[in-house]
Amino acid sequence: MRVTVGLLIVGVLSCLVLLVDGIARSAAGESAAAAIALAALLVAVANDIRRFRGARTGRGLRVVAIGGGTGLPVSLRAAKIHTSNITAIVTVADDGGSSGRLRREMRVAPPGDLRNNIAALADDESLMTRLLQYRFSGGELRGHAFGNLFIAALADITGSLDQALTEVARVLNLRGRVLPTTLDDVKLVATVLQPDRDVTIRVEGESQIPETGGRIQSVTIEPETVRAFPDSVAAILNAQVVLIGPGSLYTSILPSLLVPGILDALRASAAIKVYVCNVAEQPGETTGYTVADHILALERHIGRGVFQVVVSNGHFPTENAGPNTVYVKPPQPHHEVRQRYDIRSYDLTDNQRPWRHDALKLSNVIRELVDADRSGDTTG
Image 1 (tube, rainbow, N blue to C red):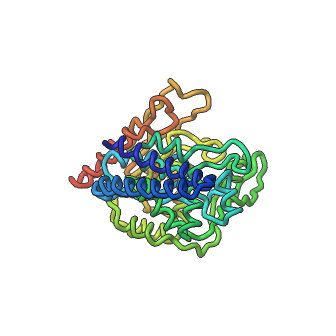
Image 2 (image 1 turned 90 degrees about the vertical axis):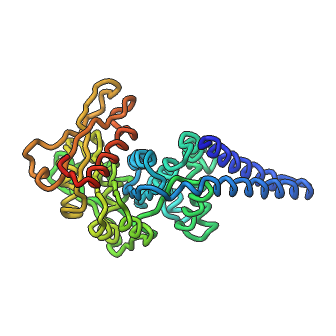
Image 3 (image 1 turned 90 degrees about the horizontal axis):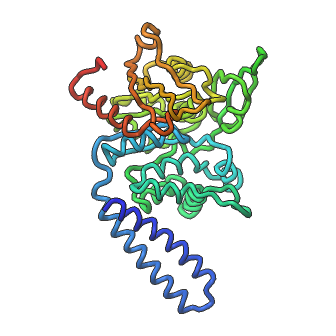
C-alpha cells in the first residue's frame, strides 16, 4: 500500500502539471472547464490519500537530524525505519549551482539542501528522488533541479519559505518535516590557510570555500545577529534523539550549528545528542582528518558538551572503495576526546559505496543508543 500511495501522489502531481499546461494551451473554453474539473477531482483524491496516510505520520520516537548537503539524508533514511516523527533541520548557507541562481535571482532561501532531505523523507524515495532531482538540460532552465523550482514557486505563492515547506510536506505526504535553521539571509565565511604558504585568506560563500585548495581554519556565518527558525528550536527542545550529520563539516554541519538559537537549543535539550562522523575524508574540507580532528574542529567553533555520543565507522573495506576513498579513522585509545565523549565505532559502510553510510546499519545504531539510554546503560 505504501508504494501505491506514493505512486498515486506523484501521479496526481504529474497530472496536475500536464493539466495546467493543457489549460494554458487550450483555445476552447469547454475543454479548459473540463480540465479544471478533472484537476479538482485529482486534488480531492490526493487529499483523501493524505488523510489515509496522515494518521500514521508524526508518531513514534521524536528524532531531529541537523546538517545539510547529501550527507544528512542518510540519517533521515535511518530514522525513517523506526519512526515517522522526524524533523530535518537544514542549513540555508548554500550559494552555488541552481540554489545559488535562485537565491540571487528570486531572493529566496537556497532550496537545494532542503530538496535533498524532502526526497529522503518521501515514502517512495526512489521515485520522488528522480522527480525532485530532475535537472533541465536546455534553455534558461538549464542546470536547475525541478525540486528547487518547485520549492521556490511555492515560496512565492505562499509568501514565505516556511509556509512553502509546510505545503510540500502536505502535498508529498512526507514521513516527517524539513525545516530551515533560519529564514534570514546568511553568508558563510571561512579563514583558509593557503597551501605551501603561511598566509590565511578570507573566503566568502559556501561554494567557494572547498575550491581554495587550502586548509580551512575556521568558519563563521554573517550576520552575527541571525535568528533561528522558531519551529526548529522547538523541535530540538522536544526531541528524544538529535543526530548531527553526517555531512560536510565546514559547509553543512557547522553553518547549521553556528546559528545561535540552534546551538542554545542543543545545549538545553534533554535528548540523546549524537554526532555522526563521516566515513571518508572530504577533499577540500577534511583531508587528513581523523574522527578526533572532526571533534576538535567542532569544539573550536561551538565549544564542548553540545553532544554526548560520537558514532564513527570502524570498518574499512577495499572492495568498491576505489582509489580516491580515504577512510576517517577512530581516535587512538588514549586520545583526549575519549575522556569527553562516548565514542563508538561500528561497521557503517555501504556495500556498494563504502565512502558513504549504510542507512540500515545506522538505524541499528540509533536503536541501540535509544535502548541503552532507556536501560541506563551508557558504557557502549
